[in-house]
Length: 205
Image (cartoon, rainbow, N blue to C red):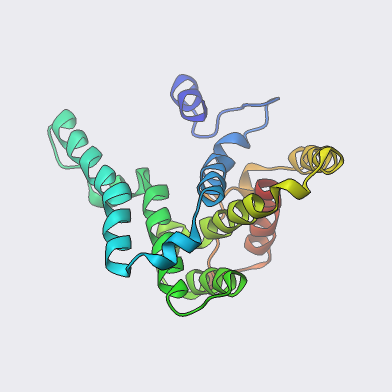
């Protein structure tokens, strides 16, 4: 819906949902939340690291490469690799996040510790922000925790969350988007920290 609106309007951030341009800014966060919701860490621990990495490369990186070849054929030239990577950055981010979690689970049994270490690790390593993995991994873990606690969220809680979203949505600004204010610990300032916290609250709520 968001990308069709981009093409039809000719705008990178089209007005959607009551003239707010927030949908295009959070759709990849929703993708990561849904992925975290079905993430099976117990199965991950039982799988060998080699088999896991190969499996995720085939599921995530192979489609990226295949579509790159299609782009080359259709356009009759070789698009710059960085452009191709940026178009499908969320698949690269997913691969980085899942691979990081898998490697950490090999040595640590408590999931909450794995969660904290993986988030801190991807926030501190230089250049990881290129894949925006440090932005995406908290949403992946939020989806996982939501799945684990979904039965605790009753109708009353859902109404409170919905009202909270309406309030946050009212104050949303496109400058809070990861596309406009990407976060990395090496170049953090008060605006990027505020934007990080605000968009994370919007995505979680």
